[in-house]
Structures are given as structure tokens and as C-alpha cells.
Length: 76
Image (cartoon, rainbow, N blue to C red; front, side, top):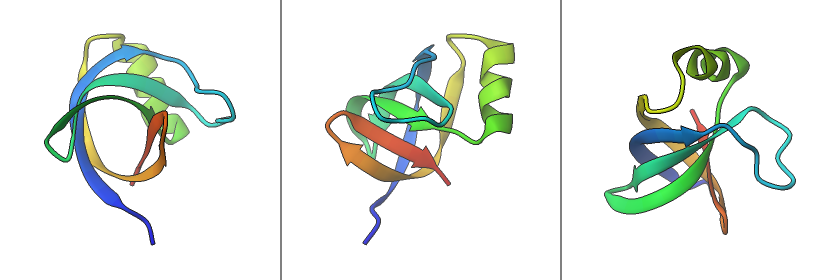
């Protein structure tokens, strides 16, 4: 069963963890009200919007946990 979470935070990087081939950003913030640094997998449109706006922007939404080590969340 998928674990749905709420996330929020600030974009601190644009990078992909090992084994992930999809567009991904690094976020410092909270996942389900717990402090976390996590990778957020985005659809291409949202990824290019992050690239356009740059590091330091706020992101928030709902996602599904794909990995806990490292913490990887897929935006839904």
C-alpha cells in the first residue's frame, strides 16, 4: 500500500538520487509535520517551472513515499 504524505519546504537543489531517472529536486522542509530533507520527483512541467524560478522557492503539496533512505517523495 502506498503511503500518502503532505510535504512543504524550500528547494535547495536540483539533483537526482542514484537510481532515479525522473526529474527530481532536493527540498529542505517537512513531511507530515516532521523536519526532513527529501527528494521530490516531479512531472516534467513542474520540474521546468522550478528550473525557471530557481533555488529558494517554496513548494508544498501531496505525495507518495517511494523510498525512506534516502527519503524520496513523488508529487501526486
